[in-house]
Length: 209
Length: 209
Image (cartoon, rainbow over all chains, first blue to last red; front, side, top):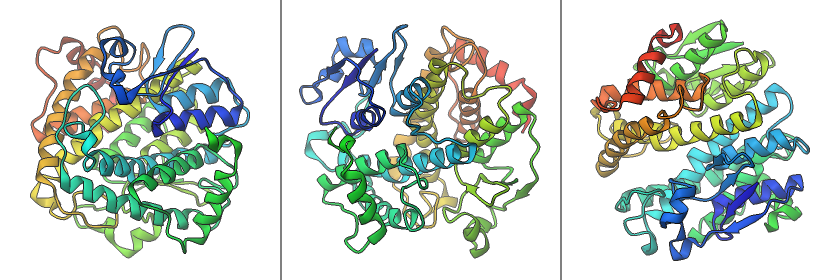
């Protein structure tokens, strides 16, 4: 296996933290997004979507999404389980992950890419250029803030985002909260449940990845 | 179990087709989205995100995303498998599903909700109102068309979207193509691989759901 990473990319961090929780070490190749290496012909031959993370399997198959990387690693290194154990728990984890992705992660990405000067005409990842849409940037900021506030309710009755066990949903929420900080969007200070959770997940050794 | 459905909603159709492929029958309650039933207090108590599908499990847990519903049904009724068999196949299915969701489904939803008069101030699903962003609607149409053209390449070397077996990725792509038709966005007529696939998946009995 080979892992195509970028140390500053939150998308790749989702997989790094997941691997750390499972104690998986994979030979890693850093892709220099700042220098535009992901748009080079050489990298397009590896991933035509021009993104990290990429997990290259021993048979040559390349997995080009966080969700795909997680699934492969969960199936091949089951312990500790990070995508649920019982059918109900697996469904709740999948449910939470999709919710965090659509209402949180995509909103945060919209906020960043439609407002930052460095992303002019790069409002979306991928091979095609798209102009920034300022109204979408502002909506993204509002939605990100609302989603971080919403996390408090998800954590009112359980230790972790998808129940009483640490799962990939906590990884995605953690990386989202940390990255939203760059946009100066934070967990509300009075969100006691979310603040308790954030302190706990940030203290795990995997959070350093 | 109980399934909260809406016969005209593509999101709910994703789960209906999945259940049909597995031969699963679940007592169903139709939610009248046209009359705004999903925004009522009664339905908010069932799903605060104000969307279908919802799968209510026998222990009372409510799963409120397609991805969560699919995971529960796959784990409890494994045959035929629709989310992959080997670790690599499962990863490829997850990879394709995420790609179709973000590059196809979300784009199609952006196109519809930011341009249709019926969605004024309802540019996103959920409890909060958001104004339409016309530029996002236009971008959504462009991206939907590009994604449907891209499907041809995904099908050049395999019978189905995620390999040689029919999976949930085919369900999502089928429902996407059918719904994009309402926006007058279609598979390119000369996309031979995609046209061959579309004819095959549309002919399955499950496609009538």
